[in-house]
Length: 231
Length: 231
Image 1 (cartoon, rainbow over the protein chains, first blue to last red):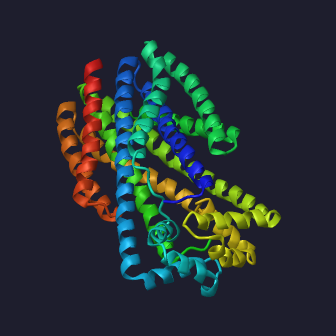
Image 2 (cartoon, chains in turn brown, orange):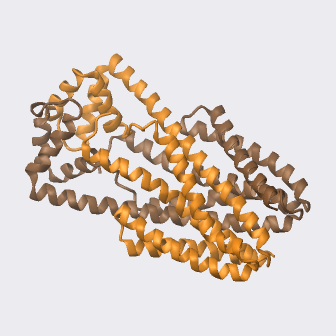
Image 3 (cartoon, helix red, strand yellow):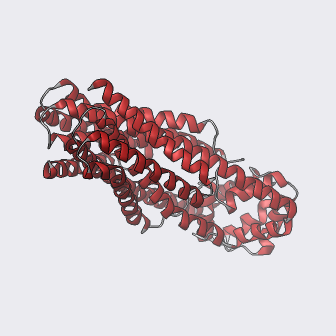
């Protein structure tokens, strides 16, 4: 599908960064909060490491495989909608031409003003279908190689993120000492991660840093309170 | 921002369903896999329930609050890009007019064919900015009320999903018996959920059912194997 170079660039760079951000923010947050929560209930780190590793395995598979299948569904959805548009362009060109006019009417253009574009598209059915996919349905053509790359990136980022809060529990033997170190290490990691994420996504980096630290802190505090209350 | 009725309808219905799907698929999968994993390492359900509840708290906060802040960032990104487009339309109309021509050139239209649309947009700066946001940058105007609704929907669906695999561990006292019941209940829930999700998203329902059951089953098996290996 034709795109302006500007849009293409924006799209490609954003996808990989987005996958790392998605995987790593959950990977840093959920195993951290789970380990912190269990520290409120047990004193030995053994069971916390077991639960943490089980969570990292479950979370990375759920996010990675879930992301892979979602990307495949998007690709199939795009292909089936495209087939429908191709049939409509071929069989009911007058109706489709009216839909192009409608798209422009939403931007205050009269049928006369958009008529030359409508006529030009009618002469190129392939480009016309591309136009309808993007401007009527708002669908971007998915990159078929993205699904697998995306899945592996998200899962890898989740595992990498998850080992940061868990490392102190692996090294130390008492949960209390490991918890203090894990809170310190993870809040630093969340802050750095939020800052870098802000730089990449264009959001104010300092606010990004505070936000990711806040999410991690709140999740850990809630998990700790719940585990302490029921144990 | 003006949209065709078709696109608007597609967009609104999809968002709520998508939020429930996002929250519930992770809520069913991760606490299920964590509890199954711990069943490979401990025999009492007490610690599994504690870990499961801590995970549900952490996961729902991470997903809900994370989703809320992401939606707010999207809204701010849209607002800042819109300001930039407004300034460009005001200060460099010739450059922006050339960009409109470029958008159409990507669909095989000559400058002459798109000229009437370009001229018409130049007479309506507001609609012109709307046009650039969608057609050049590919950005949809976010609904400001969506952020909070979306966060609460995702978090609520995560909690609702998470209690299904955890319920057998709450009711029964031995991990082995609870695990068997949890596997049964959760695989049924994942299959029903995958089927319903397929109906809503337009994917083949039976394949949707098999896919969600597969993700949950694989995540749980991996968590179980890891916990068994290290305990």
